[in-house]
Image (cartoon, rainbow, N blue to C red; front, side, top):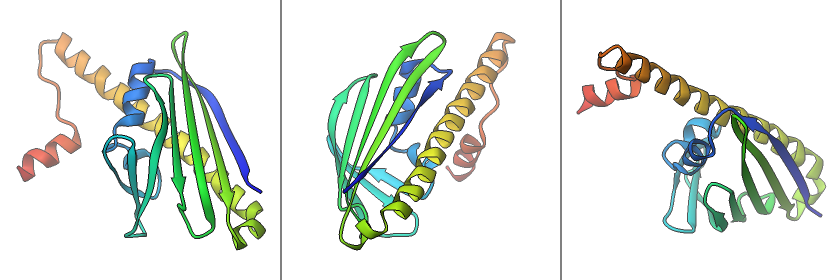
Length: 169
């Protein structure tokens, strides 16, 4: 017997920006705790956790640009047989409403540990939503600073990332 989690709310950013943040595989490790890389092509998704060299394989099972993204991961851990994640977005006055549903199917001994798995999954979902919101806020602040500098006729300051890239280039 599996369990389902749900998180919903509103972020003060337009759906286009939320969608871009959600789909940028290079940015995901910056807001999704414990993830080192996200790769894959097309509907194939490969996720590598920070503490595990093996990749978790999944696929995009539903895709409606700026509205809906669903992912399915078979055998993501030794205790979970399957995890399905569904993300729905809707334009809202001054932002974007989101609804995230996670359905997990434990396997074997994982069924006995289902309450613990559910709790850990709830914590992970809360942290993911918080990290995602923080990444959107950071991007919005960076854009605001750039617009402010451009309005004054000055070049925007480089971000720490850009400074590191320039120094290493």
